[in-house]
Length: 135
Image 1 (tube, rainbow, N blue to C red):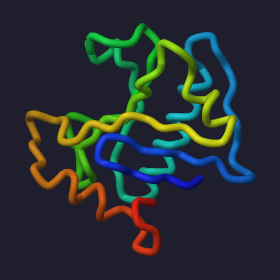
Image 2 (image 1 turned 90 degrees about the vertical axis):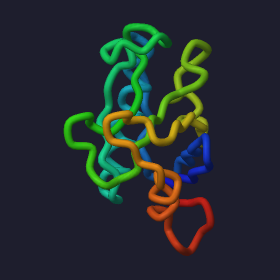
Image 3 (image 1 turned 60 degrees about the vertical axis):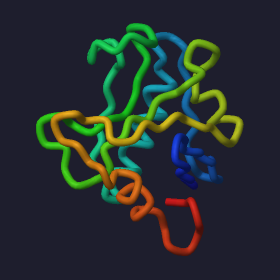
């Protein structure tokens, strides 16, 4: 998997050997994709968990829409970001992933109790030095 962060988005590119994710009921395919992304990012210095937007009382999505965020009690030193699909109501992010590439929304410095003014810098520090924008 190739991951390219921009200020407000992250683009995931599926490579040969990466799994495909399926399942419409309960947004199962999208949950699996975000779980896969969460594990991949956490291995590289992020500290994120996958939750449902409805569980955190956000006024968007439905009972099933997943997103990634840092834990609120012990957020760690990784960038404090949300990663969520901006087109969830139209199709599952897993459908675009299975086709080869998906772009997800990123929100920076999301924890009010643990402000992180250098969140953007922390995010881009975790990118690989060889490729601009890639992690």
